Image 1: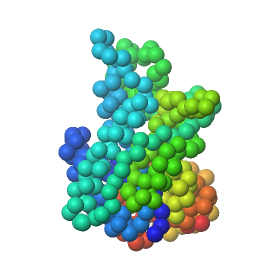
Image 2 (image 1 turned 135 degrees about the vertical axis):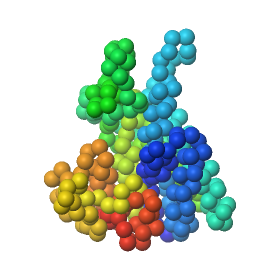
Image 3 (image 1 turned 90 degrees about the vertical axis):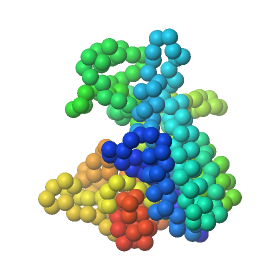
Image 4 (image 1 turned 60 degrees about the vertical axis):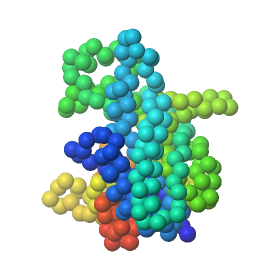
Length: 309
C-alpha cells in the first residue's frame, strides 16, 4: 500500500451559500468521504483539512466583551477548530464506513506545527481572518491590543501572520495511528502554530497555510503522494483570460517555470502549487491538485493537474 496525504479544501465542509450549521457541514463531509472511500480502503491515507470559515466564526464568538470571560488567543481558536472539524469529519466518515462496510476507523489528532519566531511574516501580517468590519466598527476597535487590520474592498478585516511551517510535532503519533490501521485526521487549518521556547513550545498568533503544512507532513512521514482537493478541476496558466489553459500531466521543471512567472494567485492556487513543488523536490513521487467533486477521476489520472518529478 502507498502512503497518501489528502488535503481537503474548504468546500469539503461548506460551499458558497451554505448554512454554517453543524448538520450541513456533516452532509458535505459525508459526500467527500463517499468520493474517497475506495482509496481509503485501498491505501494508507492521512486526511488534513482547512478551517477558514470555522475559525472565522470562532473569532467572532471570541470578541472581547466587557463583563464576559477574557478572549482566548488566536492559536487556541485553531485548536478549538481542530476539535470541531474533527468531530464533523469523524461523524461523516462513520456514516460512510457503516454504509459501505469499511473496517478502518478514524482518529482525530490534535496537531501542532512548528514555525520560526523570526519568520518575516510576523513583521508583516497579511492573512485576513474573521468577519468584515465597517468603518465605524473599525474606528472603535482599531487600537485593540495585538490586533492588526487591513482594508479590503468590503471593509476592514483583522489580519495575522502566515509563517512557513517547519515541522509537524505530532508526526510520530500520526504515523503510529496510520501503521495501526487507522485513518488519521490531523493538521487541521495548517496545525496550531507554535514556536520553540527553550526546551518547550508555546503557541503564537498566526495562521499556517494548510496545503504547505500538508506538504511538510507528507514529507515527514515519507508519503508517496500528496493530493490537494479544492473547488476547481485544474490549475491554469493565464487563469481568467480568454487564453487560459488547464494543466494536466506536467513535470516539475515546467510547473516551477510557471510558478516563477507568477501564473498562480498567492491567495488561492499559489500555495497549492508551491506545496506540490516542494513535495516533489523533497522526494515525493506524485502531487495531484483537483476538484473534490471529481476526486475519483483525479485519483485515476483522468482529471486534475498531476505533477511528477
